[in-house]
Amino acid sequence: MKAKIDKEFEAAQNSDLVWDFFSDPNKVVTCVPGAAITEQIDDTNYKGTVKIKIGPVTTSYKGQVTLVKLDKDSLDMEIHGKGTDVKGKGNASMVLLGKLSKKEDGGTQVSTSMEVTITGKLAQFGSRMIVDVTNQIFGQFIKSMQGKLAKEEEALKAAAAPAAETPVATEESTETNTISPGTGPATATTTTAAPSTPTPAAKPTPVQQEEEEVKPISALPLFFKFVFGSIARFFRRLFGMKSKEE
Image (cartoon, rainbow, N blue to C red; front, side, top):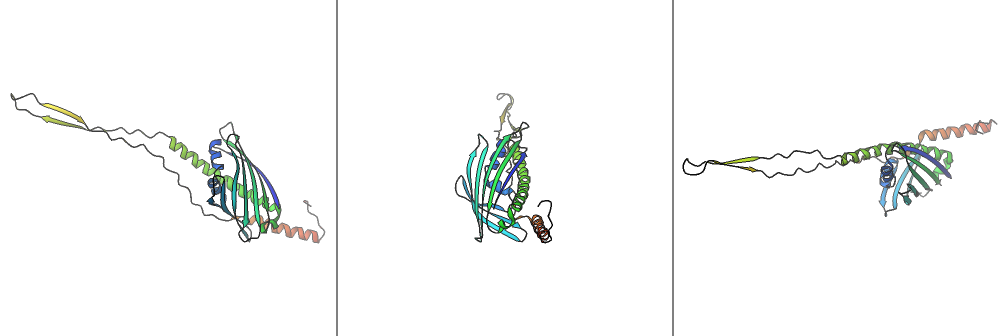
């Protein structure tokens, strides 16, 4: 069973920041519910897991993500993913094409095209259900990604801000040598400046990564929609009725 999904959305941040985020699987995976990177094989290959729950059916996949193309000059990327059901009852694969475009207001337009192929338990729900589930996942991904990009932008601005200048205080010590009248020169006063201690520059506070529990991607409302739709279609066929879709 195959399903193709094309999506576009906007990010308020510049293309450099968005590109750095999208080209790092360790960052991207934090925005995908139910997904996790378990091992980095090399610069372009990663191992990971993903859990998907549709109604009572929960499927866990273990597989690999490969960065096939990352062209920062043209802002094009191609990512392949493949996984096998941990219970050996199916597999899934994905081909994702991404394109970033700079906007006049300084933001970034993101265009994606993804083709998913699924066999096994999830394939029984059909391509329409898979597209609906993918749309739900994508909506959660965009919302999470926009929040993380905003935090990264704030952290970069804070790090770039010049450290506040702190005036260095100097201490003066006065030595007074008193000589008895008629026996020597007048009283001498010596002023010695204490050595100044350089004030260390303020370091930017690192942004703490939020620890998020990896939960399965849930599509319970879509499952019930699918079940009730199937029942309705069964009775329509049983009594010779045709729906508007049919």
